[in-house]
Image (tube, rainbow, N blue to C red):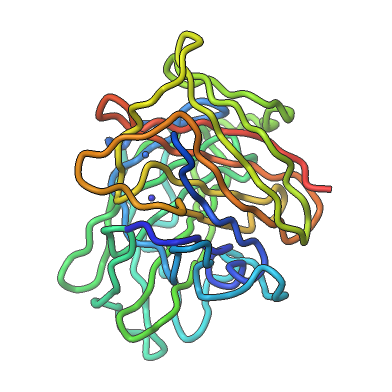
Length: 302
């Protein structure tokens, strides 16, 4: 899952789904986050494009009509090559991949975004399982990370990065098969609050298609405001949005960066514009007590 302004719906969705992620006052290990609870953070990389000041990945604008990020395996001469096309449900496995240039060579030089070169997101097609992983790159350009996916089915893998030769970042996506007994699931219904590890996160605001709106997440514990959110990859929080159905991708970041040992809380605010009407799944990462936690929300843009 290196924090500048705002991410974009991957590369191009940066042009359509601009969520400027910011902290008003107000995430560590590869722990599984499923449903509305937790997500996994192995240790991932940078997000492509400019992000500070509400800009989107890839330098696009919310008004521009481009293909949302993560829907294409190849774009602008770069291809996501998944070297591990299949995993087994419930087992720790090494996921390997490479980003190849127009000549088929692995990319070995990246711009660091949010303190990392590449961020990797893995989400189940039903949006009940989510992982924000931080892979490690070998000298030959091959990336790898260890993860365990709890259920069989089809997953979408998103690589969010900026090659050193490029000014703007992009997000590429491809499918990953996980073998085992498949039991289809349905994302939770829309709700204003989510609970994870004893923390309650409240979402205020409405996501609107084609129109910017304010989204604010407030973190409390035992009814008391949490005022000690810790910096994670240069900011107090991360937000990833996935559109139900095609899993169009958007990674957004805070308006403010975290410096030194500053802490903040309890509110984290974003400006968001959905590319279309529909159901979206929002995954908010925040860090407390030296642990990254993820609160998941289902929202409807209409």
